Length: 441
Image (cartoon, rainbow, N blue to C red):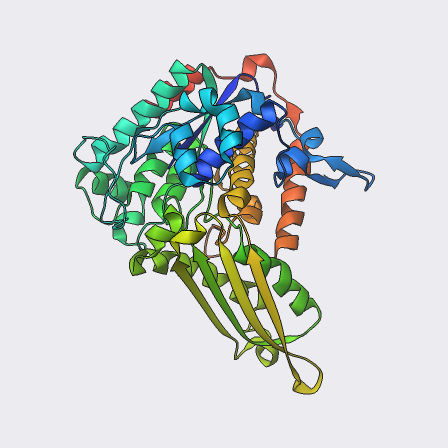
């Protein structure tokens, strides 16, 4: 049977755990673009081009059938009850005048009560949480939220993009190894099952693609990969690639291409938003540190290039500094060596805006996850590695971190999807039936 792709008919629910700085910047940004008050800079799905069949550049949106911005309906969960306008104002990413122009639309979006465990985010003390005991019951409550939101807003499809905080460092345990063990763990309130995993489980069970914007394990465990394949759901992660790590994935391949050696790479960050406050806890920072440290080793392959990178010292620091707010600043000192071993240095000072860089990533992941779902793709979507610090891969494969190779893989997959025949009307299952089947599975 020939593979087909369903057209993006109807409304698409974009559901986000964590209606904080990143999510509210995304929602406000889409509202501004819809009203032609701004341009969606940084979003490949909106402004990106790729080589066409004859080699000339074509818009990505002309290659594959993406949902349009007018078809998106935003919702989500948060541990604080603020509507999107209030949350965006407190996040202080966007200018007050810009938010004021969008205020009525943003005020209508209010968070659903969150599934929350303070053991995983000790520095947050939210009160807007579900009064539901037991992790299995919490998962069912989230599935009810997903179905209820879609029905109330007339949505044909949904995607979920994790925009909430980094959880404390967790390693996979026995409960994560297969689906039966995981579901038994839900019933027994196993402490190794984090809130992000409960959201991922609920999304997958409802047939909703899940993309993980934080370094949490979330769907990056065998049990949920197994469930995603069984339910025919695309999943991707983890950790939005925005500031300092983006610079590393651009610069490191260039140094490697020139066969220049690296003795050390020291990275330091300061930021003052909620993410920075959460990372001020050492256990939460450890999760982020592991995500950021793997990049250089996977690009430079010191095991294959010991003379150039075998003794490289790589160190990362993140410091909470409230005066900077969402305006993250990073410093990199890179000690390199060249011909005859003579030493040189590179210094980078990146004054970036964390959520301004992350918001278009969240948008692209929502649209591309929906595209993958309509194309019949399921399980881990390695072609979306372009967007992540710590790309999720399957079967012990080594992740690709080189941003240029990642982009080539993204383009290759989009070309393949663009070549699919469109499905006829009779082949499309009604969304209500699909959700009902997922709920009873």
